[in-house]
Image (cartoon, rainbow, N blue to C red; front, side):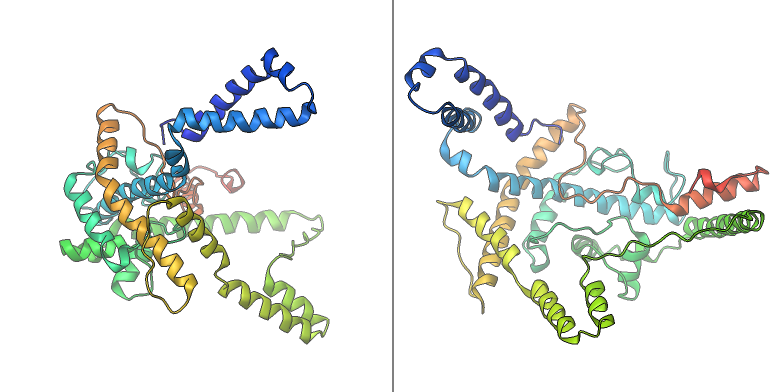
Length: 367
């Protein structure tokens, strides 16, 4: 986000207060009977609390800053998810040749978009209807907040299309909701002309690289010492395989039981939920009925977050519109999964096209 982070404001104010206190001779004289190191620790702690008082105004706001940040980041992500759906719909039409888009040459550019989604000018800004629909989505079972941030690629055309056509892929739950209320799943059945052409270029690029590498290997007479592989010692399956090689089945069983416990134990998620609920105090948070107390705690936290996001989303939207009007960059929002590297497929297309133009291409400069 482009705004100044309150935590950064606290840190700056704390440093300023601490400097003033350390230079205060009267204070130094008053506490002269105490160990200097302990006085410095007291000054550091006092500066922290005073800085929070100045930035947040009162203890309740200071106490609630954790949950306020949690609601805010999820509300901003909601706007990002709305825009991702618009961009994905546009991608479907672009792949089918229905539209031309400025500065978009390859389909991979949708997944590796350089511009943050909320700053993107290819799509219309988030409007009030979008916000109202998203609030309704949050009121559905699939709209309940998750305890983890998604790593799903919102522009993965192949994966999302497969989820719709044969159930073998994965689709964001908001996309499913949006398709349901707008009835425009036909976008997922549009032909992928541009993607198919790119696939041909990729095959040509791969073929050329293999050919060059084969010639290079034939010319190279020096014996090549194979590089040793790094063993992923931290992975349970590697540890189990190690135990099996040693013939220690009992240890392998121990490792399997430990791995199962790690996967099933709810401690980390429950700890997060308990911490969230503690920061909500003194606001009462209803506790739902559940077969296990851990499930009840987690569900209480996620339901409460979802309700709060519904409440603040309109005001966050107004802030978003103000930034748009002022032409202020918003940037990537928290929880948004971004890709910054150049995909190998795109490199193959570039190689193939340069070879097609008669150039002698060195693949090592691309790979």
